[in-house]
Structure formats: C-alpha cells, structure tokens
Amino acid sequence: VNCYFTAWRSYALSINNGVTTSFSNTFSSTNPIGIYNNKSVGNFVNDIYYEENYAEGNTFFTQTESECKDTELDTTWLNITDKIPKTADNIVYAHAHGITPENENLTKDLQYLINKIYASGGGIVFLDEGIYKLQSQIILKKGVRLCGLSPEKTVITADYGTGDSIIIADDGSSIFDISIIYNSLPSFSDEEVPTGFVISTYPKTKNLYIENVNLGAAPNGILLDNASDVTIKKVHGT
Image 1: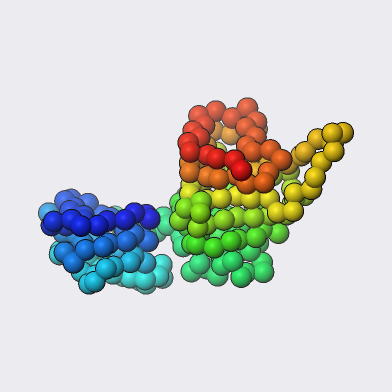
Image 2: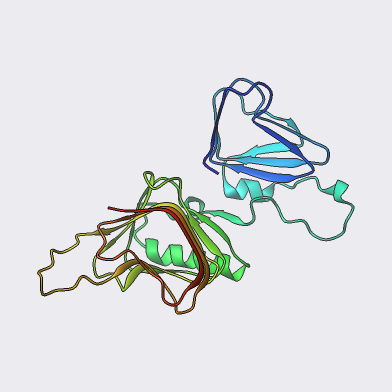
C-alpha cells in the first residue's frame, strides 16, 4: 500500500507461490510491473501507472473495491475444497462506502464501517486523501486497522470538546499514516488544566500499534490506561 516503484530493469514485483494485492501504489517505468508464476495470482487496485498497466501471469486490474470483489481468482491449483477469500476482502476502501470529506454524517458512517469490519473478524479501513471532520469520537474496535495515505494527505479533525478523546482504541487495533488534529483549541489560563486526548485506550487494552501518526493542536496526546504490548513508532506532536 502507498509505495513508489521506479526504474527497475525487469519487474517491480516478482511473485512465486503467493496471492497478493497492490493498492494505491505508483509504478513509474515502461517495463512490466510484475510477473506472477509458479502458482501465483495478483490483483492491482487503484494504482497509478506511468504508461501501460500490464503484468505477466495470472493477474487482473481493478479501480474500485466492488470490482475487485466481483472478480474471481483462479485458485483451482490449490487442490482444496475450502472457500478461498479474495485478496482484498480484509481491506475496505472507505471512499467506496461514501465516506469522503464531504460526508455530513462522517462519524456515524465511519463508525458503522468499523463495526462491520470488526464483526467480520477484523481488517483495514483505508481513508483516502482528504480532511475528514468528525462530529463525535469514534471507537476503533478489536482487530481493526485505521490507515491513511500519509499524515500529510489523510487528516482527521474534531472540534475541542468532542469527547474525552478523538479515537478510543480497543485490543488489537492499529492506526497508521494519518494526522489527527483538534480544531479551535481554546486558550487556557494558568488555573485551567487542558483536558482531552487525541487517542486513548480502554482499561487493560492489549496489542495496540500506532505508527507514522501526527497529533496536532492537542491538549494531550495518547492515554494508555494500564495497556500492554503497545508499539508506538514515528509519532509526532505539533
């Protein structure tokens, strides 16, 4: 997701014995972007191409999540009877569900999507480029990853006083490549103590992962309430 491939001699991707999905990547070369052989299949979704979007082997190209889910992979070579999940089933592209910066019911629709992914066993909710203003806090449920393009391109905002925090994180949840910013933060006197956090956890939350996240204009950053197995990388406050 969100990688840049340029000036390769043969192939940007060479896959053997694998099922892969490429999403929102940039391929800048006139050579084939990939080769899939030895019982491999690949799916390219919403990518950017310098010239031709072609690869060698068992691949297909789509531009939306619905197209991807409607396209069957050839899995006959697996020689098993169990149903094989499609490559993008664990990635949900929020814009394909009407979750855009212009959405007036953004919080409600985003929370509904998070709940849906949680009920299906977990996965990735991907927010495209834009500024997303929440009307109230959201709960990032167990096993759900909230991911953007980058902190510069995907920004979540909320007015001060929206709640105790903008995002409440549950067990096994993750936040990647996003900026989270308070709007209209009031000026506090020496007698007042700023309240509110950008991200907080439920008590005794486990397996939380936060990486490449910018916390902006916040009275407080991250609240870990007796949490364990927490990984925080490349988090900046402004």
